[in-house]
Image 1 (cartoon, rainbow over the protein chains, first blue to last red):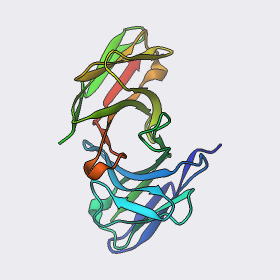
Image 2: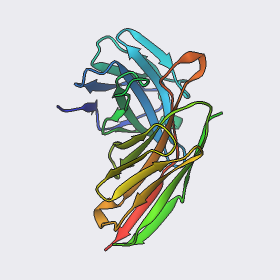
Image 3: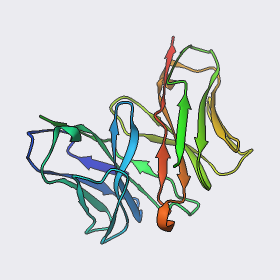
Image 4: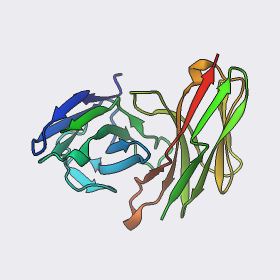
Length: 115
Length: 114
């Protein structure tokens, strides 16, 4: 099992450019999440999905969009990148959080620099 | 608003010097408390889940405990390879009945010197 994988590992964008971050999991998890991690801020939830075809906003959704067309994939899009979106992005997945196996497992992260 | 505070922000130990990390929380309706380890440039790695006050879990040199207001991560006789950032997160019922919500603390950076 590869667990949770993320593509790309590192990317540099210019302000106004767009990009898509890809997350894939092979654990058959229903739930998937996108977080960002900034120095001194801790992990903050951007968007999440409780199943194929469904998405919802987290704490800091502005400037991001997501799609969950397949159970194993969760895409995070930046339509017009801003320097404030410079961060490390983590994807996670889990079984339903209320169940006995409700633990979130994280990917290795994507480091994004917006100039 | 749910709050999670970890202390200290940074801790430097000598190899073999036992200590504890603290995670205090103010939440409505705790459903579980998670500990993760994060190495530089890597994603958080799951360590433990605690569900109720009085519960304890152990893994090698680490032991996590939970009370109604805080959790401790005890590190016994640490080794340099235990150096990492340790993150605490609480699972609460989100607004509107959603059950996804994890609130993370900012972490404790542990350095163990040989």
